[in-house]
Length: 509
Image 1 (tube, rainbow, N blue to C red):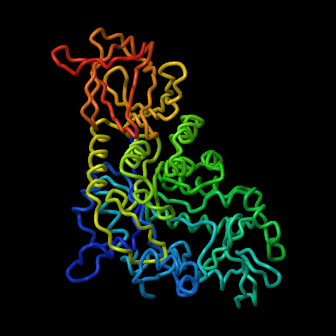
Image 2: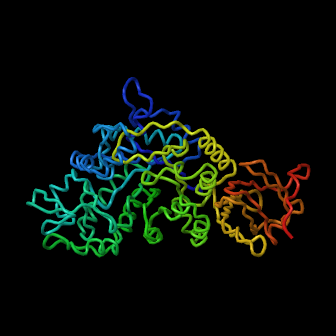
Image 3: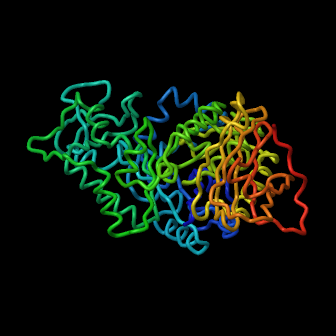
């Protein structure tokens, strides 16, 4: 089974930057075939179009009036104008594809274009809240969390059922998002309405990225909104989790539908249990960007193989700082090999492979032009080519457990080793040193056949060639002595007696 390899695109910005089509701005109906061919050649399997759904004027107005956001706009795009602000794509006015990006017809054409190259389409599902402009605010106000009187979290609204104080969407730890309205998942009617919406989205794509998915868990929701009881006399209350029923309903119609969840707070495993195919591994991202080598390794070693296979591994996305603005090239290279070699979903962000350094707020539809960093581009080109050549992402990958190379040498704690392929024939080993200094370890390669000729090791990302005996790697363990921020990808194959892979490296006594 191939592991998914996802590219996130900021749809509104990305389309504006593509060459015009017959003098017209590019839309999803006019994406060049050559671009889709390039994605397929990179080994990508999924394209996530972030921000295709319609937004509205009220949510956009809140973004323009927000002093903090205006300061962020000034930093990200110093020459921004009001026309560059379209509102947050996570304050959805309608689950209809915006005409500005090509509408429903354009999306369908783009999806077909992806399918012709073997790629699949991911879209956003924002379950926790809707935008201020959504028609349910007027027509079905009982769907939302409400206050019985003025409250800092709420705003007054004249609805079809009279004046209401409707609460803005939020999570438990931050102020509300004042361009949104909070759905009330204590209500059966909301479960049904959002399941119906989810099914409509599923007919337009091959999977969804669920925004802030953990906010819907019953224990989280009850804690967040305990001071705001459900509104409406006689409203039916749900005692069920939303996610199992929603996922089952979509899988009944679309069995291969992919469900990915943005999740934090140690609740990722819970969502996997409820049916999510993949959940964010934000803990790993934070350790890598914080240059916490030992913590990153311990984080990975503490997780089960199943958990890792269902995790999304990434260095940046639209909510994070650009990795090229945080890590130097050597550390960036090591971290990139790590997230691209781990079992699970591999994830790249629009502009990451070109070394972009400016994080663009999601409310903007234009971003600051940046020159491509040739060193970063060359680094990713070589990584992606080597990963495909080695078969990384195909079949089953596993995290190996390094051991101390000799007593009183703790540097093994900086190393991550990931094996892909069949140890009886040919396999690959990714070796990553997250520390800036040399590190050593031994690692047992179990299951190797007793081949007297041994094995040839070739580093696809460097110039190292070695020959090692099967019994050494099975019993004493393969010895590795790697440079600071090393990123190596070794291909193992049965030794060719006529070859000369290089002299054996001396190991310590």
